[in-house]
Image (cartoon, rainbow, N blue to C red):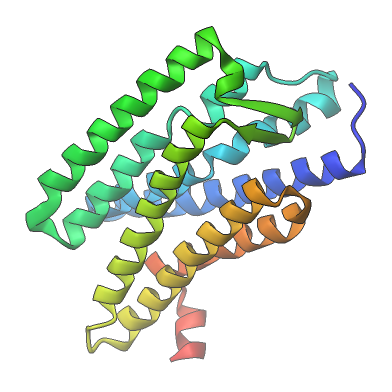
Length: 235
């Protein structure tokens, strides 16, 4: 399969974002084994999970360059889309453990139901009419169907709203370090939403979109594991 410069750049920027996200997620996960705090486990999994829509691009780039093949349509959708409800629930568990604990059961049940509906529709379409999930204009650019887009917008809004709410609640503290972390988290969730939106709605701006996603990943890391050198510089 022959791919042009644009496709190589798309795949390369996706791979960069995925690698950064996995490294950051693993770094946070390691803190779980050091401190035995569930928040590190949930948050680390969350950020790795948020990068899954860009995994097929990354894998396709590697496959094209090494074996001159790409993933099947079904594999693309399973890898990049099917696990999103699970990772959203992981994030909402982490979020409601830290804020709105009294509403945790209600929030998790609502999004569990939404997730189950999504999975039923997703796998039904996958094995009957995969074009209703989406179509690939290139191995690195998918146009999702209206049904999937609705769910993806719901998931994206849930992530950004809860992320900002969590950050705003943390801003109320008098601790300057926690306030700084909260600002990084708010920036991370806003940038992730902007980057994901641009990447899907305005594919011509994929370079800008994926640079924004890279910055969001770093901001997320600083929000949960603020390095000493950055803390000393900013505080």
